[in-house]
Amino acid sequence: MNCPTEMSSSKKVRVAVIGCGVISELHLHCFAHNPDAEVVAVCDLVPERAEAAARDRAPGARWTTDASAIFAASDVDAVSICTDHASHAALACAALAAGKHVLCEKSLARTSRDLAKMLAAAEARPDLVASGVFQHRFEPVPRAVRELLADGAFGRLLTATGSLHCFRGDDYFRKDAWRGTKAGEGGSVLINQAIHYFDLLLWIAGGAESVRAFSANLGHEGVIETEDTICVALRFAGGALGSFVATSASERKWASELAFHGTLGSVVLRNDAVAEVSASTPEAEAGIRRKLDEAVEAAASVFAKGKTYYGPGHQAQIDDFIRAVRTSSRPFVTFADAAATDAFVFSAYASAARA
Ligand SMILES: NC(=O)c1ccc[n+]([C@@H]2O[C@H](COP(=O)([O-])OP(=O)(O)OC[C@H]3O[C@@H](n4cnc5c(N)ncnc54)[C@H](O)[C@@H]3O)[C@@H](O)[C@H]2O)c1
Image 1: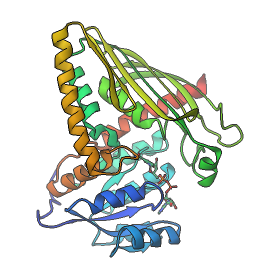
Image 2: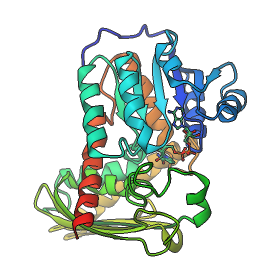
Image 3: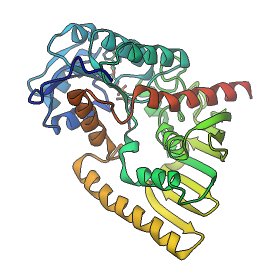
Image 4: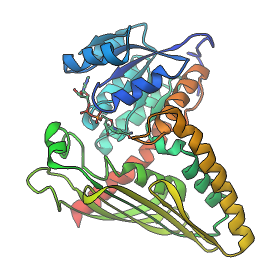
């Protein structure tokens, strides 16, 4: 990226958090724990939420209900977008046009049209950092599996499969009008809860090239208009085949699995932990286990740093965003990186709509 806006190394990055709902608490916590960041403003359409966020989680920050006041403010360097999916594109595009660095929660966009607008806005401002949240990419174990695969430790990848079985009750959807709607959320279980594991599956396996899907509403009829259950078939870029299933109507609260099987070995992650490893020789298996054990050890220190409910990666991603802003360098997850996964979410929805 170009560096016209490189910051002096002693200056803190002045951040505004837009959207003061559930996830904003974690963003505010992580910015507060980054010595190079300072939250100067918070914003929510609901004044009580903005006021409470400033009072309870960002002492000293001002609050507003008007995001355009944030974009116009000369004392805001960067914004963190923590609003519903439908509002991401307009907020991110306006922020970039106003010269603010942007961190945007998943799903980056609600539709492929919005996604294209966001990518164009980021491309138009290569001097600004535009990063999409996929915090699980910062966790050491998925990173180690990705490296092992890329290094050929499992041989040629044959299959890559993933799943998330979780539960979201009717009250969860009724609480916020945007959830479970096409107009507000853009979908449901795939674009929201399961997108993290779908992203890891695609990212670790090296990207997909085509997708087919079926979706259904099996447990929330009359409550949501979008899917609570989905089954996606994938052809990966390297030729491997795979699948991903997810539901938010399960009796299980949160159960994830990712499995990668190659010609020389395999690995299964269950609930983010290494559950199974095998390889064609004991030496190869020992080498794989050694690297994964190191990652598990490193994960313990990442976990120790932040709240763990949404995974420990948020602190690492927010630290990475602040580093990228301060050094005018590429964030670990650019808009384009996050958009690659969003694009497959939208392709899966389009396929399911045709099926
Ligand atoms: N990465 C993760 O693990 C994770 C976890 C939870 C949520 N999320 C994502 O975070 C985002 C927010 O989710 P949430 O659960 O916090 O939602 P939420 O409904 O609890 O909060 C969203 C807030 O944004 C506000 N808002 C909407 N439009 C606005 C605008 N134009 N200006 C100012 N405020 C506006 C709403 O009033 C609301 O208070 C979503 O994209 C969601 O998918 C990510």
